[in-house]
Length: 247
Image (cartoon, rainbow, N blue to C red; front, side, top):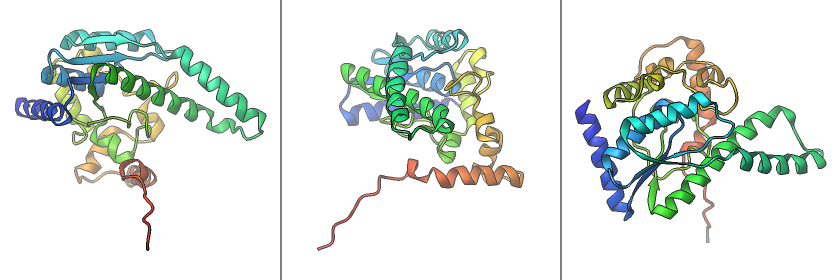
């Protein structure tokens, strides 16, 4: 495990040099993935790393978890409350949609959740520009394979240090790095709406996704769900389609 951590830390330091920046930052949500990344970037850039807390109607429990993550690795933090910004922007957008009779109520929850993720991405880049830092992503192998991230939201980052680690491996890293138990053992959730959980939304478990990625046999029902997610989210992982002129 020490070897794995050292390799990631060295890689992070190389990315800082290659990009010609001063350091690294990550959005800390109170979840296990961002907790691991916070620990890693603090090790990579002890004096030039930052955690950004961005509550949007966030529960006190998740805020406390995020603060405990920061304390556990000693990373500096700032908090930018985006609750009012999201409410104002979403209100203005839906007002226009409703006035043109194109509003679809069934898409409202997802649209609002994705707006939250994209507001957080914009905040991270604004803070990163101020410090001349890279924005570090928190997607793991399971999320990347299934496309369980918001395009230009939590998927809008500069580098991805844990994208080849399954959810189970991320948990092993978290345990080794000293992530608080409250975060280590909590139900995975992007905290996009009240009561939201990753596995409930996906219809399968991280354990099954991890197993499929590793080439292990899983129930056919889960395999169908996972492969369907992978197929319909291909556009999130591939480069943008570009028109090629012919002369």
